Image 1 (cartoon, helix red, strand yellow):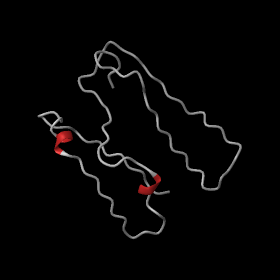
Image 2 (cartoon, rainbow, N blue to C red; image 1 turned 60 degrees about the vertical axis):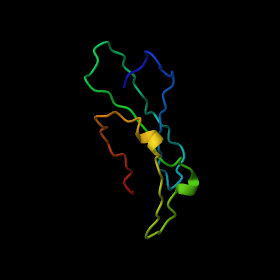
Image 3 (cartoon, rainbow, N blue to C red; image 1 turned 180 degrees about the vertical axis):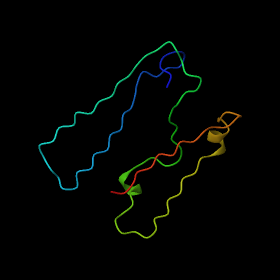
Length: 97
């Protein structure tokens, strides 16, 4: 993803999810994040755009639900700012464990 330049916001956000249903203790997370800067740019950039609902615990699906409809809307003031040639979608999802 591009960093720097006009309009650059000097923040990165990292989201890490831990799964510890047995509430085990004594483990240390040794994962990390490597950021590499280069002047050799790729032809395409990646980024994140969040649309619709702001996440809160009220949006969490309770256990044992057969259905949990949740709808969010993106007004045309938002979508008309999308590039005329469209966007490419990379689905982000979590698998049940």
